[in-house]
Image 1 (spheres, helix red, strand yellow):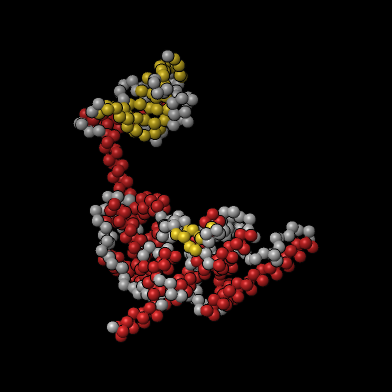
Image 2 (cartoon, rainbow, N blue to C red; image 1 turned 60 degrees about the horizontal axis):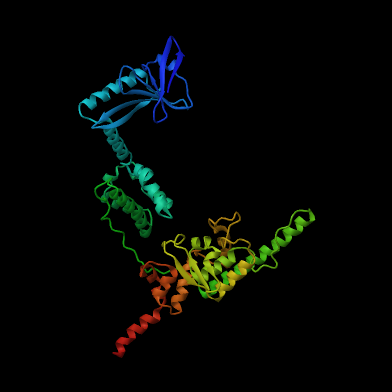
Length: 439
């Protein structure tokens, strides 16, 4: 199919259009500055092929974008090299580039392959520094592969800010040892410094795996020696009693405040809040704390616990591997108190998804304010919510439960972390020593 179209500018141009197999209109004309006054946007893309220099092309998109290309054959294969866009580059400049490309082809050089290698080199150069590597390579990967990937990248950027603009191949073991010495001198705990170094070491291991560096320069940096059997914080019998009492007092106060608020709203004709007098719990905090005391679940695991993971028939809680810190699913039996707490809490909730949803229905982000208020009311100092997990484990060990069972309930990968509770079972050590006398 042939169509003739007359376009007028400084003169009259008779341009020949035809439709090729790719549904692209082809125009035969000399690509000059004057030509652009004659070109119009068409619903279909079309190409202007230069009549004086074979392979020199101007492609016009329906959106109005105009791009210069040079097409050629190299070793029997057809190639298309993008030169640039108009008006960022003029027709004369684009033509000169096309002539240079033709000269390279005559010398046996494939411009497209050369351009590809240059692009690879630019990408390699962009990730040469620690900053570039984190932004373009490591961060996208770690965010998709690790649940706390954003924390890992933030830790590296914050703690090793002085190394961000240094090439990753030039980060040395000596520079890390120097950094550690300075951090410890400033009061940083050895275990925290170890975690910082471990995060950086893991990132550089990926750089080596992805062929960005030949070796991990800090692979031989050893962690600082720390005492893994330090005394863990758990509640004494008196502290636990005070905590439970403070939780009950808090609920009594919330119920009284709700009664007062509803009386005020009733007088003014406002819609009243739900009545709490007939509920087992005033809000989420008390059942969440009691469940933590009796299951040893982490705060994040409680935040993401769903009713589908609660089996009242088998009296079993399931922590999904996707929500667990270890990445492994584990099952926790419910004792009588945990069972009754969840049954009572379910009876007063309407959400069928999360066990402890926030006001907007999503998982909690933190409960620092309410938790701190309860601790203050109970007169308990230096106790974190995570320490309820230590409290759970400590009570098990002191009750004579073997460490491997405690490990399974806590979800530890091995006994290394669980051994911190071993000192709470001194009767086992005394029994072992007493056997020497018997022999």
